[in-house]
Image 1 (cartoon, rainbow, N blue to C red):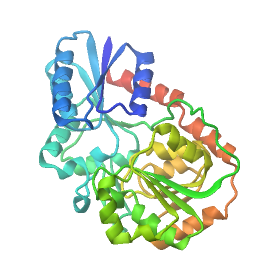
Image 2: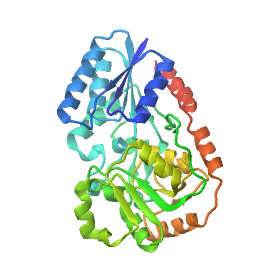
Image 3: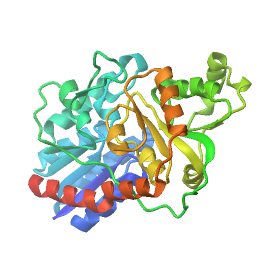
Length: 351
């Protein structure tokens, strides 16, 4: 028996899953390059469909994210009596109309994602909140999240499987830390600037003028709008990068005192896992997997409020922690071996 593993992008956590699956059963990986070009993505989805059709020994197909490709995978698997697993990452389990954020904000993507989730053999979520929850950080009265809240009449069996560390970085964390606060979060849309909490951190940067704030992932397209709203050119303690090589991000994590993950919506942010592994003291929003990753370390903000962020940062600045112990804790809780064992158990139940 063989498996087909469909990866929308060439992300490191997906490559790690491909390695894990290869140890469980013979597995072929298919990269769709969804983030490169729509036409290329469509062509790769068609190729994926034909690969499933002409591979009689492939009895199981898995894919990351409920989206167009998941619907195509699930449809073919149903026609050919193959098993299928859809893995939820975050964007495919939320809907924020005011930010135009989430698969379910788009009419046709919503229909394809819903079809995939209703008709696949099993759903695997990287955090339980992606199945059913309320986001109290964003809205104290509760903002509904999770596929069982968003997809009508969804009855597909589901499991929770946390993400894991990928290959251990070669860069070693520094004992002496710079007075700087790092935040990594991509912004393909302008609304993502607010989703990642950059506006909260700009307010904090005004308060802590003797600390450096480094933002990685703010697209150059939004800089003029950000300048118009926040006048950051007047602030000499903010440094912005649209993109950096992974090694450079790790180098920043190795010397930064604090890492900030105060997003409105997340799954299990891998950058937070890496930052804590590299010894950064974390501040995070009480959203989905962020508190789970943080465990007993750092400070969690219960609500989206710049005063709470400033208070939390002050607490972290004054706090002495055992960075080596935190790194060891992350390595233990999010090891590839833990994920491999649980994924094996899920596949056994499915097939």
